[in-house]
Amino acid sequence: MKKTGKFAMAGVILALAWPTMLEQLMQTAVQYIDTAMVGVLGTDAVAAVGSTTSVNWLIGSSISAISIGFLSQIAQAFGAEDNGRAKRLSAQAVTVTFIVGLFFTALTLGFSSVVPALMQVDESIRVLSGQYFFILYTPMLFRTATTVFSTVLRSAGDTKTPMKVGIAVNLTNIVLNFFFIYETRQVSLFGATFKVFGFGFGVLGAAAASAIAFALGGILLTVALFKHKEISPAKNSFKPDLKLLAPCFKISVPNFFQRFGTSLGYVVFAAMVNSVGPTAMAAHTVANTVESLFYIPGYGMQTAAATLAGNAYGAGDNKRLKSLCKMLIPIEIGLMIISGAALFFTARPLVSLFSSSTEVINLGAVVLKMVALSEPFFGFTIVVEGMMQGIGNTKPPFVYNILTMWGIRIVGTFICTQLLGLGLVSAWGCMVAHNLTLCALFLISFISGRWNPMNKKAN
Image 1: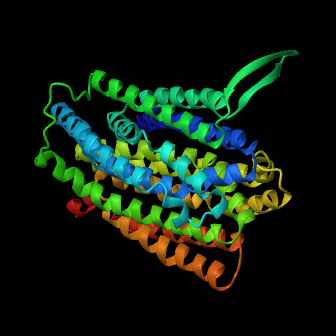
Image 2: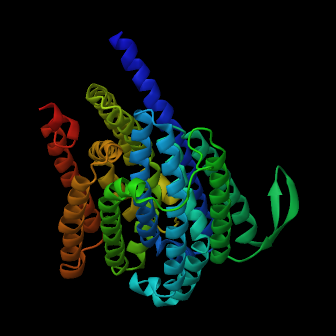
Image 3: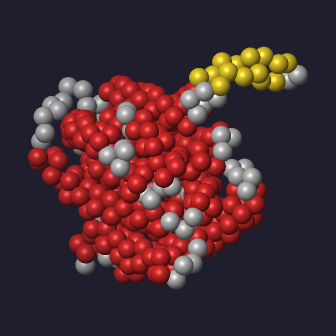
């Protein structure tokens, strides 16, 4: 029976994780294709697109943090078999999405022309970079809906719907890129040559394609949420309910400040890298793009960890939660060992897909091999953090992430690049040190049992 139970739990974990992994794989594939398609236009085009990537992370992670409170509370409601509460929470998520989406729309569009200067982007591409950013964030309300509603559906155990929508969005982006970026041209396929219409918008065409695709994703997920049998917010009040929102915000606020603080750290980190020079900036942009592929197993498992931990906590089943840990952590570390090894041995050919510059290829390959060695440690960190999010214990991750980001990565990078005049390798060395220290803090919390409030109750 024990073996059957373990196999059953492993099956549930993988059933929740694989759609998220596939969805993220598609997103990463599109990011690869976007970078390659824009790369044809030249180094300045790649730099313009990549120059505000860290700001994109800042905004996206801040919105994602808000959704974590709903994930935890809805997962716990299902664990307690309180479907009515889950649906009421879903309705509150719709209200919060509308308010937050409008706020970030005004914020991003209002500051679009300022962002490139703050990121120390080269003056020759600042205008283009600002225009790209403005177009990309025009459908901010839809992007917010995509993030929050995907999380709500996953908290109910539905990871397939966000996956299907993600695939549709990414395919739309690719097709529109093909027409929006390039001029009308002759294309050869299977020996036949024919004319393909194109708008020739270049970098701005890539932004427009992404914006339309994002809008489509928001619409599809909104429809999917309202039609969902178990979590539909229809027939529930959309008026803000503090009794429902207060527990969500108690979880989301620490997570928001954690993600905002760490993402702001990414912005500062990228700005210091940009100041080193165009070669370092290009290598950093390409390396980030390549690296994102190899995070997929980790984040896919994190989604499963958060949902299942929330279910167990909602049911008050500490034994199930401990069994979950025994299954999740080895699987996660094993996946990230494989992922890290793959990144280490394919770093150079993957970087060469996005740049023909020997300097960029050499530099990008070196930093990717460095970070590949830390992948298993990063995997442990994010799966334990996922379980803590599911049970609503978000304060320790906030403290750990802020301390390591600003105390190690940012301070270290400032000393290395701004005071000592060192380059990109030293900056990524600080990033690896940040990841390893963060893993150590989560390991201490996990071994001590402090991460799980039910351990205290048992004592």
